[in-house]
Image (cartoon, rainbow, N blue to C red; front, side, top):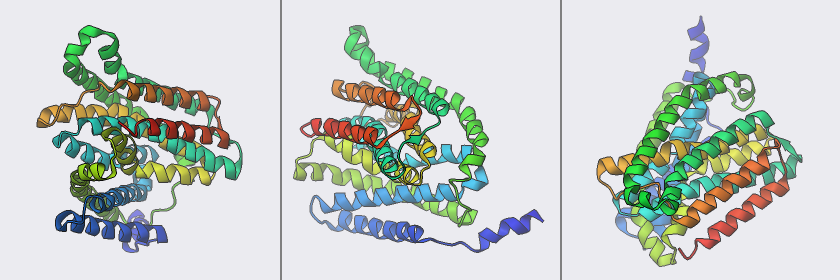
Length: 366
């Protein structure tokens, strides 16, 4: 009896206009990225095509996970979306490390945190505030998320502080980074069950945010697999095109990583967070946006440190340049200060965007 009700969605997949745009746009963008990569189209066009392709593939990953949401539950879906949402960024970083672009990868890691805490969260506050006025974030839940985010980012930047303040540690930054990375990955594994349970207790509220799945499981999993495989290829093309484009446009490694790579690799949070705030789902938007920096600090950054050592790529450590460390500390403090009262306004959103613009500008020259 239950199988009869569950098989109806699997035999009748439907595609809304945004689904068709993502699928068609992603296919066209990947094709153009391939043509410009192998045929040759100057220094800038291959970079632009591959950047658009990476962004649309990230959106397809997010949409596929969203269509799996009601089957796995809110907790598992949130974790899956956060993990797979960073997949294009992981591929880009690995190929960049293979190419020796350590500075770009370090700037991209910090830039992803800054983009989410300042730009995306600022846009969500701005759009939601202008449309709905002051929005509530559920102060208790907001505080717990913010505390975890502060602790995660703090642990990630400790090797940098040890390097610059504690001189004996400077000679052991690679070993220290590996140890810290393993600790952060273990911490993530320990917090994973709690994240799943927390999501399940919020299933009733999350059900308001997730519509009935339009795609059958086989289609969602199939598109997710295709998007993941294509992301690996397109990320390689993106990195290959990155250096010529930086030289042609006179863009520094730091600015390319901090702004361009970070924004391209975080397309899901960029779009979804603002859309949810516009629909007055401010608490859910806040959770999605803030969860990404937590995942970067606990998973992506330490995983890249370990993989760079395992694969023999250019050595990546958690010792970041001083201005990157100061910038991320400023972003974390501002976000914690603004959200601790459990409310958001459009003025706060505008201020966060302004701080992001100032930080991004300061890295234009390197």
